[in-house]
Structure formats: C-alpha cells, structure tokens
Image 1 (tube, helix red, strand yellow):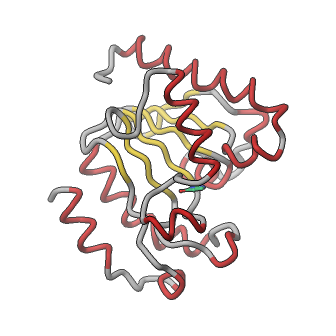
Image 2 (cartoon, rainbow, N blue to C red; image 1 turned 45 degrees about the vertical axis):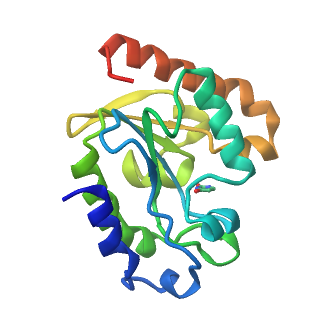
Length: 187
Ligand code: URA
C-alpha cells in the first residue's frame, strides 16, 4: 500500500469522537520513504483548515530548526501527529483518542520505515518512548526501540511560550544532525 492509498482509507475515519470536529484530516506530509520522521501531538486550527501538519506559528519555528540542520519537510523528513483530527479548542488529545489513532500512525511507520523518530513534545514522547518521559530531563537522548532510534525534544509551542528553552531545543536538532552523519543516513 502507498501512503496515498492509506490516506484515502483514513479520510473517512470515524473511530473516535474527534472526527466530528474536523474540517480536514491532517494525515501527514513529507517524503514517502524518509529516514527521519517527526511526530507532534495533534492539529491546531491552521492545520485543520489546511489539512497539513505544523503550518501555524509552531510550524514556522519547527521549519527553522529543520532548515538549520539541513532538513526540510518537502525533501527529507516526514511529519505527522499522534492524532489526525483537531481536538476541540486545541486541548491535548486524550489517551483513548491517541490509542485509537495510533492504528494509522503504525500503518504509516510500516510504509515509511523511518530509521529515526523524533517526538516533538511531551504527548508523543510519552506515548511512543515512555509513559513517564520528562522533556526537560530526557530531551535530546536517543534510545532504540524495535530497531528504530527515538528521541524526544521540546514542542515549538512550548518554546514560543518560554523562549528560554530555545537554546536547549536547538542542541537536540544538532544532536539529530550528528546522529544522521554517524549513521550515514540518506537525507
Ligand atoms: N502542534 C502539533 O503538535 N502538531 C501540529 O500539526 C501543529 C501544532
């Protein structure tokens, strides 16, 4: 199956109540066989309107971090979220919504087969790395899970709220660049 075929299947999803509030499904974007995959939490207002992940203010900051380490959402990474429909008033996706929607994310992993997964923010890090993941303590550390390297970093929205974390967050993206070099990945 291709990502487009999977997306078509996902378009009509009514597996959880978030479907009732969506304008557009935010399936993901980027390179179909990217070695690097980024996972955020869920679509906000702009993402819901455009059907694309990270296109608001957070997304602009994310794109800057990516550009600084020679990555680009249209060239060498794939970006998705824990949930594909916007939670009401941008609340955190509920555990049960994530548990339901992870079905689609797993199908995306099977097609894309990333070598490194970067969890952008606490929500995805706690779901995909460890339930007690603390961004302030564990950001930037790579751990291997099922043959894939995983790393959690600050969510750009958290950096916009507290710019003091920007420098620390940037180090995580530099660590990612080093890891890409070390593994000689195709980016
Ligand atoms: N925040 C996220 O976690 N994901 C998006 O797509 C947009 C904002």
